Image 1: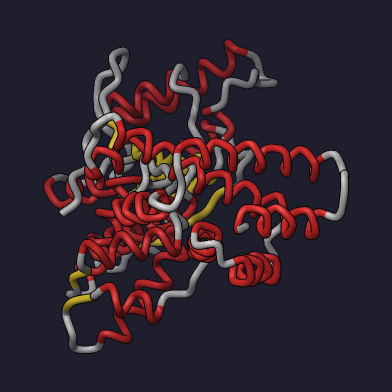
Image 2: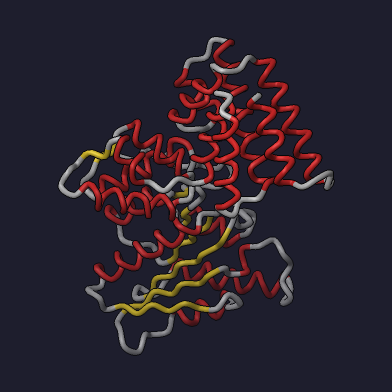
Length: 356
């Protein structure tokens, strides 16, 4: 099971929930009249809203309408709408996407008028229409100094949905397989995330593919993931670094061309190469200081599979060689940005040089 942790803020009472906490709270308690969903993960925002819609549909036996209001809708208009009796259903869910009253920007109607509008909304929270449910969707992070945010936060009506990484991402993927009555091995889990990346929509696609392929088999093994999962730029970068580490110039250039054929730009490949060699260097330095493999995953904020890969690749280089490679990649970055040659040719030349 996921082991998310509530985040507490010193200045504000109440709790900011994640999706797991949100679901658990609705199993144990009645829904709040208003919820604020915010964060930088569009996938989780959509998932949370979809789940809440299904929850309310079951709660009301389908006797609920869903209304999406415009971004410019003001708080007083929202309150008026919330107090209006639905025409065809006994209940309604109002979804307000990107409301402008959570930003620090000054409002045209003046501070005093805005304050009155906010007070009216806060009064609604004390005596809400029991037939109306409201979700406020905010991309990014709202201004926590706003009185409306503080009021919602105090009443445990705030849900944070940011991009997952590290342990949280691994747990999300593992839970996804459990939802399908499947279990993925730790090695397969690490490899899946390393190959696909952190994009939840892409991970969802690959998970579905693996579940269908597994059929009646319950366990998802590394071999299955290696066979089925579409390799992203990160996976090809691994192959490119492997080829460079082993001095296989022809293969290295081939993998570089694969990335370019996938539509990746030379600057992106330079960035990814630099990132991977930096991880190799940092892992090697940390091991030299006595850190264990498990600690490296936490310190470097990468999956254990990626740590093992970096350590394996690092066996072919000394710390001095890795530092020299980083310098060469930095020089390549500057050369491409300043137009000192054909980017494709410059990239291939440095790859051949690294393999020599």
